[in-house]
Image: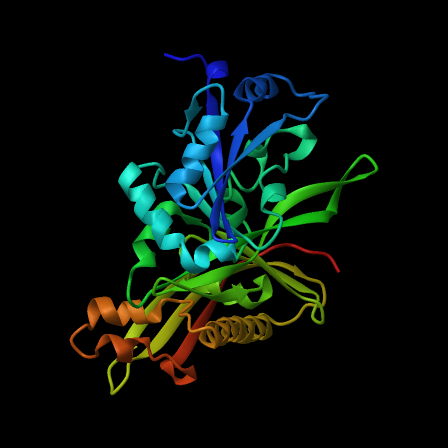
Length: 350
């Protein structure tokens, strides 16, 4: 068995396509340094990130290019994350999925992200207190998503399951560099955060949507654990725990969909003593508006953000053909029923 310092352990791959060539970035971390971090609370120096680049006219050539340039063996068994630029996803994502399927290069639980700009920078951002990228959102997004994020995270398995489905859309969340939120000492601290995403539908890149237009996704995602909403005008804040959803297909010349949402809430703040029924109405209207806004945004780019058509395709396949299923419009949503369930009210002082 080779010792850890005698191999280059690839932890993430970044894919770009420019001027007729594939550019693949290979991120490697110093695992011996990470082990020291785990046992040392005070770390004086940042853990270095090694970033290599392979270029070629095919994906095979780009991989071969990086391996030829490394004087110690390159090991791909530790890949945690994939980064894709829009230029790569637009025309070459299918080629990568074929390549990865042949070579069994990628584990199914590998995280998948898109990057609009600064791919290299996104792959070299360290965590807080000079810790390695392993201690960033990119390597462990589940906790952030389950505790107050509406932009869904996806794995390689999610991507390959939906990419070739005739009626499915999938959102590839976008990583962006943020150097305004945090400081280390007197210096701005760069972090990566999720903000928006690219929709893929029927093997095509259909467009990018900013984060604020994706808020409706949270209400139909069963993986969401906690969300927090507030109303500045009413001075009310609530915590939402595990919203539940159901989609019913209504038969007709074209499929229509009825969405039912059960939203359990805890009232965290209510300094103006707004009546509970009024709070429920405010929340109901807000949830409906966010679902409708996200659906409209998806329609603008021929995407199905809630995968409504997939429901009809799987359970009412005999009633419509593929073209009818894909013909979504504003009338496709027949009704949105929102049930706000107030489970707890925190004690608060005026």
